[in-house]
Amino acid sequence: MTVSPPNDPVSGPHIEAVRQFNRFITVQAGLLREGLLDSPWTLTEARIIFELAHSSGLTARDLCQLLDLDPGYVSRILKRLRNADVIDRQRSEQDARQMLLRLTIAGREAFDRLNRASVRQTSRLLAPLATSDRERLIACMKSIEDIFRPQPDSAQGWLLRPHRSGDLGWIVEAHGRLYSEEYDWDITFEALVAKITSEIIENFDPDRDCIWIAERDGQRVGSAVVVAQDDITARLRLVLVDPRARGQGIGKRLVQECLRFAREAGYQRMTLWTNSILTDARQLYEALDFRLVHEEPHTSFGHDLTGETWERDL
Image (cartoon, rainbow, N blue to C red; front, side, top):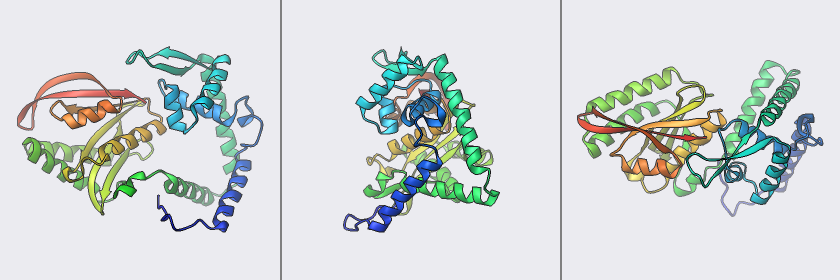
């Protein structure tokens, strides 16, 4: 997202153009009707049903953060959905202090009806358009999304971006160099990373996989990758921050962006593999609600190590 300097005022014509587009698209999308998609639900209620349908359980706080909503407003919506037997609450097995919201059988049926109605409405909207116009429309929508996607990191002198040519070679080199210098791991680790990156790019599906690169002053300083482990599980791989760029929150933002992508791609949980000696990484994963689920000693890269598997729900 390109942010104008504070002394660059937004022009009146720009404001009016955006307002006119908002008026146009709300009619096209049917958002002004009494119930979304001829359902009994408002837009916000339907969105909450959607989010719960694509997760294994969210807290009210999760919904507030995910949708940028006021807690009091969310509380009133959740009360209505509970009264309609659309959602119920269950105590979290990982943290007894948390109550997780899940769809009931009736809630799942409500989501299925909304989903089918949305597919029909979108199909009717696109049907009159030529294939070239549909592709142009989707490209414009993607541009809008990219422009407005938050990039607060750029104000700190660094930014996140999707991968491009040359990035995977850098990921291999950076991992090999860093782990050799900091942990004395031998060249077999760099060979493993090369094999992993080759498999990632050969099987890359942009709807299910993503590769994020952190840049500072035009130089690569971090990476993180999401790939599919199975239909409902995303795997986080190749998280790295160059030592010169540590302490700026880059690692946290990389993992948060991967979590966001995985959630939007429809995954229900995320897993990762690391080693017990990587204390900074382990602290980051724990802070982002991953939990250690398995440990296993192994001899690799010239050392005796303890591998760890961490997971979290999305």
